[in-house]
Image (cartoon, rainbow, N blue to C red; front, side, top):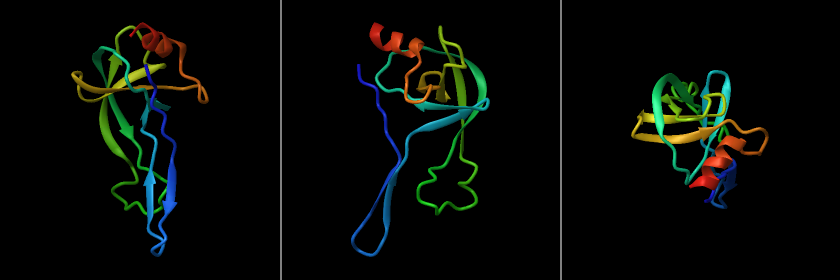
Length: 117
């Protein structure tokens, strides 16, 4: 299985300085920052509460409404502590797995999910 890792980047165009930007998908939940993990089978469980998808900060041009980020819902991931990973989305059936990395290292519990898929 493959893990998607995307870093913040920006490129200046040669036509006068408009910037194109992309940011890593991050989620803030209970004072922890989580990053997405792609192509992993998991089951979302009970609703844990609200989480925030922070705005991309690499362009410097956010308006006041975007500064606080986008609200989403965090769900437990069956068999994994919320300190390690949560699922975020509109419903348990429509979620994205996000994990709290240690530096750039994937938590071992998530690696086990990947290896078992």
